[in-house]
Image (tube, rainbow, N blue to C red; front, side):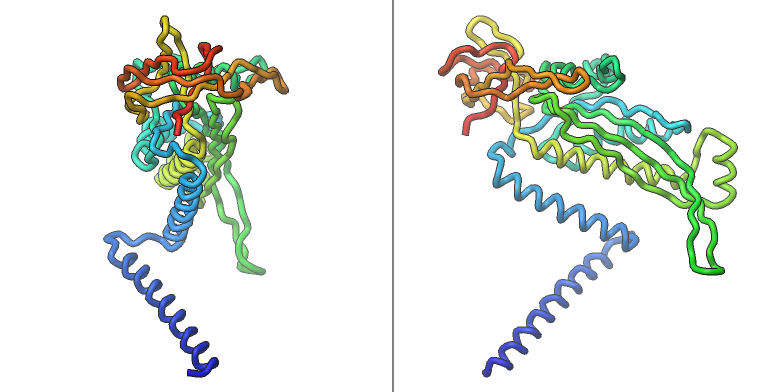
Length: 331
């Protein structure tokens, strides 16, 4: 077979392979009982590819992917001028459930009536009104959390948009929904994520007029949009937290025992050796914010007793280990 024939043959092989993949994809899509819009399928496929890529990267760069990252979640607040009871219902229960169901490796701490985060109600704030990252990190360390999440419904806006060309142009009414999310790291007291998510829906003239005359937006499409935003927010929180190394905190020293508020639910086991790092240096930033500066390794401790949410460890090596020191599992 000459070079030209080989090239042509290889080209046909590639075309047939691509066609086979396409037919397989279409067959899977057709087998679904409820067909989805093309834009939804593309969006879901894009998310899957991104998350798979990030997962491969984590496996290469992090050696503690078997350990669970626990996060705290404050109830999202409504800062918009519109009442939306559906927002409270969808996000307060739906977001923790979504993360726990779809994000292996991340666990939302129990938001029940007796939980500490529920008693605190809202994240601590500085005099300027912004969240006090340092106080939030101190709170999270006491609970053995990797991060604490807070957020809000920032705005629901009405927007008129001209669409079409020339004489066929007409006005379309849109409702834009904005939700802001902050993820705060307990190890450094820095923000891991501060992002505003946006989606919009189109409404008809009657719905537009009703919204103009009332502060309450009661649209079935709004609930659909809020649920889509919930998945956007949940996926982003999941990816952000899973990108962080697992870190534990020494919150108490009882004689020769070091107490850590993380246990078997995290994936720790009896006999695990933990490396201890200094976390005593605190620096001050702009606006009165304070941050922890990760320090050098100062020792090793070994787990000698463990429950679901608490670990006791004994000294193996080192000195200067104090309350507030951070720990990581030794390879």
